[in-house]
Every structure is written in C-alpha cells, then in structure tokens.
Image (cartoon, rainbow, N blue to C red; front, side, top):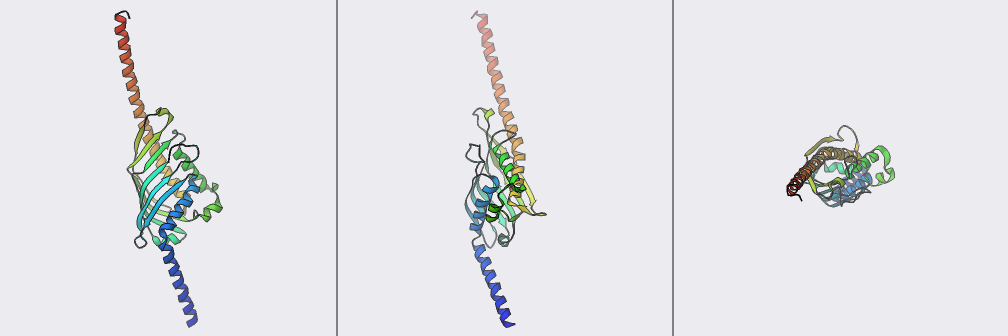
Length: 247
C-alpha cells in the first residue's frame, strides 16, 4: 500500500511539474497556435510578433497581429492590429477547450478591397466557413492544434478604421470608421473550433463594414456629383456669355 501511495505521489508530482512547464511556455504555445492554425483556416498569411501573457494572472497582450489577404487581392493586408488585450484561464491552455474570458481589439486597421458582393473580407469569411464545414485539411488541422475547442466570453472591437480600395473610386482615397462590435458567449453552449470562432467574428466585421463602406462611397460619390454639377453649370454659363458676344 505504501508503495502504491508513493507511486501515486510521484505520478501527481510529475503531472504537476509537466503542467508548470507547459504553462511556463504559455506565450510560445499561444503564438504557435495562432500562427499555425489561422493560416489554415483563412487560407491567408498570418503574422504574430509576440505574446506576453502572465502565467499567474492570465492577462496580457498579443502584439503585431496581421492577417494578410487571400489569393487574388493586392493590398498589403486585410487586418493589422498593433495589440490585442486578452484575459484567459491559463489552466485551460493545456486542456481540450481553451477558455478566454475577454479579448479587446483597439484601433485595428482594416482594408476593404473589392466590391460589395465580393471582397477580401468576404473571401476570408468564406474560407473560414468552408474550413468549419469540413473543407479544410483535417490532418494538418489536428497537428497544428486547430482541433482544440474555444470559448470566448467577451470580444470587443473598437475604434477600427476601414481603408477602402475599390475600382469605382477611381483612385480616390476613402477611409471610414468601423462601428464598435461586441460579441459574447462564443462557444459557451456548444463546442466551437478556431474556424467557428473566426467565421463568427468575420461575419460580424463584414456585417458592420459593408454598410459603413457603402455610406462612405455614397457620400464621396455625392460630393463628386455636386462638383461636376457646379463645374458643368459654370461651363454652361460661360457658353452663354460667349454666345452673347457672338463667340
């Protein structure tokens, strides 16, 4: 009995030690998880410069997070985020379901390239939906941690700016604000994969971005029409004046 208790104690110590080693590498685990999983889901390059999360408090930030564009789009990126504030249950990092208490994305730079029916953002969303529906590489997804489940209690995107790249703008620059977005209880009542989370977030971003871009384009078009009308009126007026003098 003593031997069994001793063996049991050793096993517990080994498990606890292993857990501390894994948690000690939490920044590496998160960074590798993001960089290996997100490109598979989005079919676009993803970069994450650094992760700084406290093992004891579970709070910290992800720095230099950039999502590139899917094939066929020429702008430098789709999303560029200097930092993401995160708070998570550190013990869950080594489990099958990672519990993230909150994510706050402040002042992200977003590029909207394409048209209202199809854009780089809608393509990223479609790629995530296809992966979530079983269209991804299951072997690679399992190897890279995409099989882990996620729960996000609260995700906020605020102070975002959308730079618009559309042919109908004819080279004019347009930047519009993204309305504040707040998503709650993602993956709380059901198992959600990384693909499920990304498609939900992208759907929310697209749902807010398209009306904002439409409004911005409409305003820009309205200004252009007014300018054209004024310039046209001036030209007609000059024509009439010249006509009076027989020229």
